[in-house]
Image 1: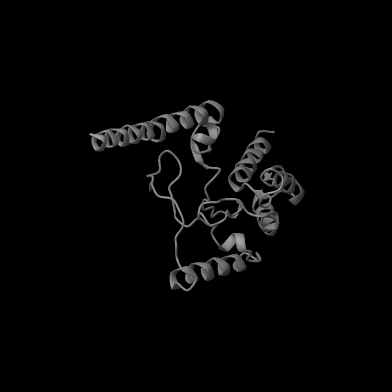
Image 2 (image 1 turned 90 degrees about the vertical axis):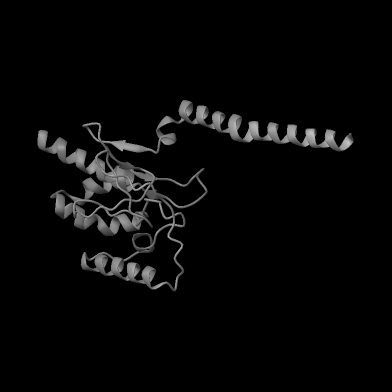
Length: 199
């Protein structure tokens, strides 16, 4: 009889833990996230003036035009924008340092930067540990400043002000390094161009 009682007790404990971890906790996180941090909880998707999604502030994206700052490379390519076909994947590549595919990608990225007269810095040729982070260091943004200013026909000082504005500080003022949010910076440059054309 005590054996059956122990089985019933184990089943009850399993059900209670399942209820807490599979239903109550996820619902609480969902409510807190949507209530206090709706922008971040929904992927930090930046929209343009036409209310079209232009990308996430949290994921590295490819910017090919000379008018834009290059983001930190992402380990995977994903489609952005509401008309784009989503890939549904994200994450690191998990390629070993000796993998020829990884070495070829790094050499290709470094050569492309050299062709643009940009000193290849680590955050412009290597992905982050997660493979997603878009932020680049202030020196990496500074390396691209001349190219972007020339392509947009503006003074470097105007863009430097925006670089400073969209540089996120250290987490809790002590963890990590300051980083330039490339998507926000590039969008601010586009808005600046629109304002200049209207005036």
